[in-house]
Length: 185
Image (tube, rainbow, N blue to C red; front, side, top):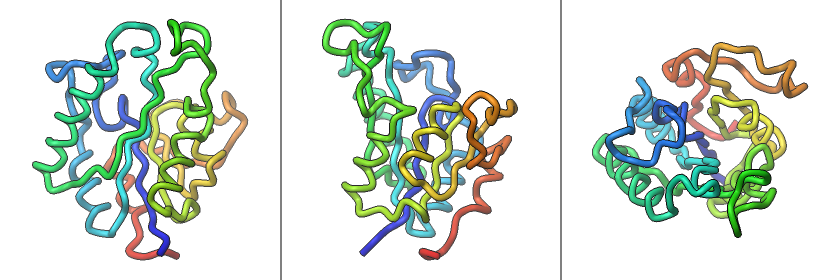
C-alpha cells in the first residue's frame, strides 16, 4: 500500500541554521515544527528528515557527532508525540570534502538520491508527498524526485536562481499545515 510522506530539511526547517549545527547546545527548534509534525502524524504521513551534512565532509565534525545530535533530536520529537521514520543524510561535498567525502555523490541535494531512497524504503507515493526546505537545492531535489508539493521556507524568491517554479513560498511552518491532506488524492 502506498503512503505519503512529509520530507523535512534539517537546518533552517527543523532547527535554526547557525551553520554546521552539530551540538545539542546549539540546536534551537524552529517555531511550529512540533505542531506541524503532530498534524502530519495525525494524517498518516511518514516523516523523514533529508539533510546535506557537508560539515562532516569538510571535517568540522564527525558522523558520530551527527548521530548523537540526531538521536537527541528524534527523542525530542518522540517527547512531542511524533515519530521520525528515518533521517537520511549526505556527508559529501564535491569541492571541499576531505578524503572519502570529497565527491559529488548522488545523495547530495540538489540531486534526488536521499528522497528516492526514502520513497523506496517506505513505499511512498511521491506525487502525494510534501517537502519543506529552505534552500533552492532542497526544491531542486524534490522536483527531480517527483514530490508533489514543494514548500520553500524563506523570504527570497528563488525561482530566478534555479529556473524552477514548482514550489510555494511560505514564511512560517504554520502555513504548511494547509497542504496536509487526510488521504491520498
